[in-house]
Image 1 (cartoon, rainbow, N blue to C red):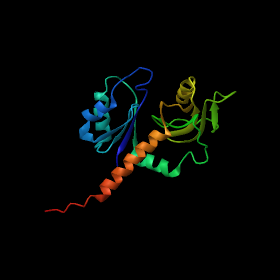
Image 2: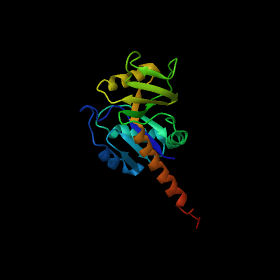
Image 3: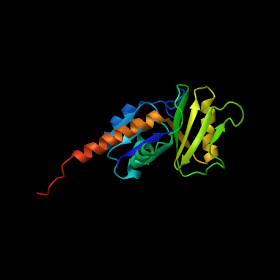
Image 4: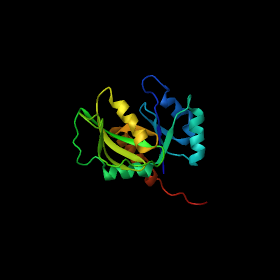
Amino acid sequence: MALVVFLRGVNVGGHRRFRPSVLATELRAYDIVNIGAAGTFVVRKPGAKARFRAALLRKLPFETGAVLCDGRELLRLEREDPFAGEPSRPDIVRFVSVLSRAGRCPLAIPFQLPPEGEWLVRVISSRTPFVFGVYRRHMKTIGCLGQLDRMFGAAATTRNWNAILAVVRILKSQEKRVAGEAPRRAP
């Protein structure tokens, strides 16, 4: 099964800038598909996970965190739909934060940030290594999302739900492609 890579804090606010499409080309032996500019990739031929991680980190022009997930985890998320029952509005963004390791769970979920007044981030559920929530489009939202690292005790990298669904579409297309290949016969 494919791996999904989430790089942490790249191409944000002019910091740690790079071109993900160039990285995907440089690592073409792994059959990588780039999803947008945030450092999200589907790796269709990852081989040994540790060897791929080392190759990926060597090619990056800076140090950053990289979370690797089995593609099956994301396919399961899409089937379970963690946002069922959450209203969809233009000013609200559904997000998934991926924890770099199993962290601790805050005492009470759901919760909101800031804890008092109008919320900017609402965490609605968590299933290690994923944290699910919604945020309002506001300049202070990024600071609230940054608090998730401390609250969950692990570095988190965040993507909107639409980016996760784009990953799922690629994973499903790979499944169809693999299922359609005829088995090879031994000579």
